[in-house]
Length: 157
Image 1 (cartoon, rainbow, N blue to C red):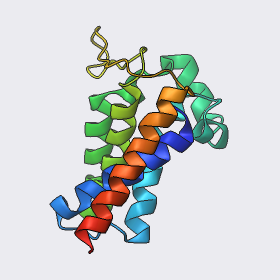
Image 2: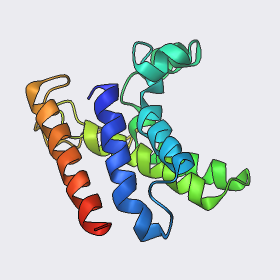
Image 3: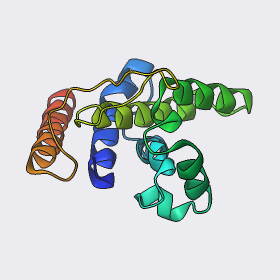
Image 4: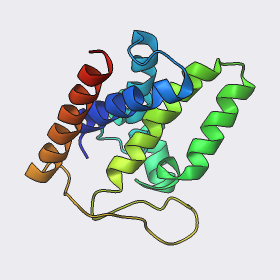
């Protein structure tokens, strides 16, 4: 999926998850962390939005491990979570980042390429509903936006 799609899906996922974690969903700091998390897995792709801004890190990761490798796995999610909590970051902030990260993985699983969630083990997980930058991707994003708007209006009415 494209960066804009990941951002929208990351925000929507955070808005849905935050109340379950007893965190204010619309807090700008947590929204920002969810957006950052929704883009972070693509640090392994030098031409991605985050990859262009993190060179030479993205180039090194891409050449050593490829795209949709470790950064698109549950090992990365667990490692990032443990690293941040061990470094003393607040649970709420780590939660927002991780929810955004997981939203990225879920969105990429909607493409035919899928993900190796159990990297380095073989096997790809995919529910191939759309190709990257396709009309179907746009339709999914519009549906997610509409659903989130409906949920927010209903919750705050």
